Picture (cartoon, rainbow, N blue to C red):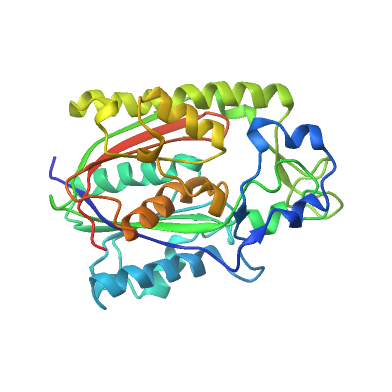
Length: 337
């Protein structure tokens, strides 16, 4: 298989930071707010009502274009996108993004099933597509845009989980070369857990039907306990599988970047890999739970701060939804700043 590199990342955060006080004025359950799954970050960003996932991706791409040249869009052969809340459920984001950028990719693909692990999943797909075709450059996009539209609804903003999500977009540029090679990727599907997350309007109405009720992801307390146990196990499992195959002990990984549902997951995951907290950066307190965008946004923040040393091993790992998917990837870092 020819080498494929994650040569750069960029990100975009919408609007001004939203303080936790916005939610506490509406909170109705102190007991649930103390649950470890829902302890809120200090801040988060919310996408504007008329700001789309493609708008966010376009702004993140502007940063890449500044670094890699005005003709970057013309080089892109593949665009793969993941949008937490599709603005157009029929078309998806990738075709419109290609049009906006002035790109003429041979392949566009929208991915919906891999949730918080979508950045790793898209790396795997782009790598496979590039290895088996003439494609030389791919753009992967993770847009989280449901915090503002969904979690500020009048009935939903009262819930304990409402302050946790934030909006943002992270993108990655991949090339068929060995400048920052992807060393290994592990993706696993667990269909037995796929039914443990619901999207409900808290009534009989389907989300596309007119009527009362506000749509939101729903967990029972018993399911929350199960998801917590799965998440603790799945992220280290796939991360350690990658470490084993590339011949690096987990405690020797230079930087470990994961999705960021809450602080306790973050602590448990770096403990499981025997890593100190300073080698497991996150943007949770600044951005909240960014779902699929958490990995690329954190990577971009660390890269721009100069904390990712070229030649170092960066390990990415995440799990999705209630545990139906998990993925990990290792990269020999070499991205531009």
